[in-house]
Length: 394
Image (cartoon, rainbow, N blue to C red; front, side, top):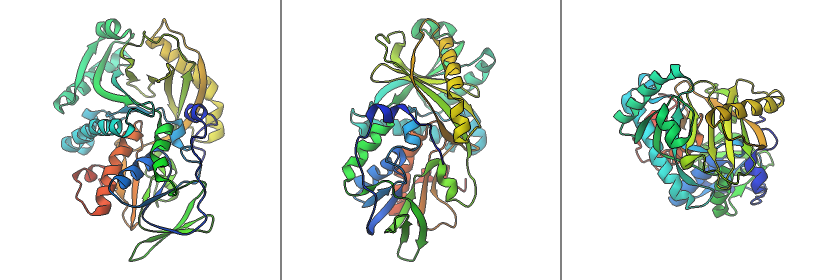
């Protein structure tokens, strides 16, 4: 599957951080992680921290799937507003899903250790148009009820405190940004000799003692379990489609000499569908994304990049009318959505010894961090109450 266009910014800026060989010989381990993007890296990090022996394989170069196209706005919010999620999964699970998002942002900060472009930022969710204000305020009240650190911003507050032209917004205190490609390599470089790219898992054979995974190059890996972090390509493994695929578009600006107009460097995203989202980077660039659509064929999607870039620039100009920016890179990538906006984490019925970490949605990296804890617990037989929230059987 063609997950991204040719030139996502992160891989262009950082280039080939590290080289990993393909797997040529048979191996054994406790857990085989299939997928060498940010999700697989976070799973491997958690397993390593618990002393669980793991191996990682990826059919592409490490970090060159969806990770390379991620805009990496790290937020506890999910695409389904909290007040709406309550009606879908119940108040206890809905509020816990949001609270978990806060917890994993703190966890990701500790994992980053001041590296990989990780920066704590506040987050602003803005009303795209006046008709959205009432629903946005209901969302604000739902978050307050859940104990989340939020503040209501009216038009005057947005203009005077943030220099933004919008009618209303919610400020969340906990959010962050990072470079997902650098973070992936930072974590996997610690696993020298156990990371293999250009190696595709083609067949799974389950026995009483474990699972044997056949690779396309002829080698095999015998493990006690497999963690699948294959993202939007997981439909090739599962017997039924569980995600609706879309495409999203993004641009990265040239570095700005002065970025002080963006007060607090908040992450920004809007209500509505499609919505615009934006953030800054450690080298004073502006990243803008959105204009999502249902075009998933790579050649059709990529033909739209030029037009979508113009639309993103217009949307950003409505936020900051006095600050034109110059795009340096533009790209597109695939993403998926689920009916309730929550990820799928855990075993799939009837597929023994296989666990899935499928962080579908606009904040897949925070979902991946949740999955790392949940799946590691399930593997060692430790009860994890949060697993029910993201189960395939929910």
